[in-house]
Image 1 (cartoon, helix red, strand yellow):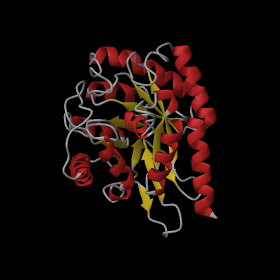
Image 2 (cartoon, helix red, strand yellow; image 1 turned 180 degrees about the horizontal axis):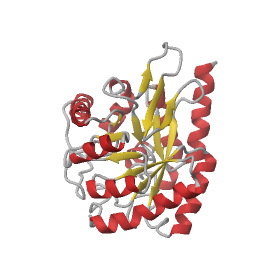
Image 3 (tube, helix red, strand yellow; image 1 turned 45 degrees about the vertical axis):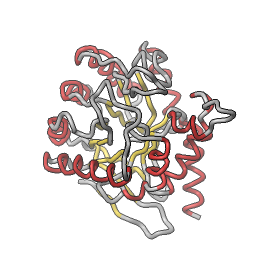
Image 4 (cartoon, helix red, strand yellow; image 1 turned 90 degrees about the horizontal axis):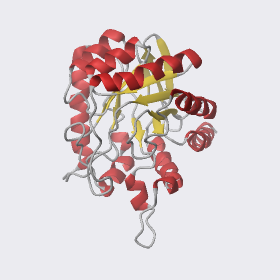
Length: 305
């Protein structure tokens, strides 16, 4: 069973989830949030595509992330790069077999080498998710929020695995970068509430919500979501944010008409992350583990003082 309770206003909210029999504390008095390290075993992800396709490179990166403070490793075998003026053509869809070939061996290797680490699988395809769970993955990260495969929730329930539901629009492989929203906070809240209801109806005990920073939102929309993260803490359990190096950060940091390049978005990412955590996010999905861990240590120290 999940164990989630709200602390007093000057303390960190305690949030804990059951990961297939292992308890994961997402936040408590010792940590404002936990870090989910991104491991894309893909050739075409926007930030690190092609860097970790080989097993030795991937495991070396996992070792670095665990050492620096990642509690969860999120393994993705298919890029979710959106279509639009920033990234151009969207990510290339791949077959189920290819995605399984990419993610299953690395999940098995991570759990063999780092047995105390939690592993999530970044996929919306039931057959891939089932294979990842059979390989030992603990958490499911569905960027479509069950819009295409409610079966994912049934698989999660049967495995007693937490399910992350993210807000997005469009079809996998062609997720748009920007869509107009009259009230983005209400739109995302309503959509995530439906996703959570579907998960609950299927029997999922622990549902994590992700407002989908960068998926079908304008720069202004993304910033408003960060400002109002607290609106999503009441929907389900923990709130996860994935802000790391995204194009909105690059545009916020624009100088002289030049958008900040991906490697130059760290400080902007950290600032946005701090706002999200202070507003209630308790899982941070990121490429930059050590700087994020230092940020969270400072937030925890201040909140606990």
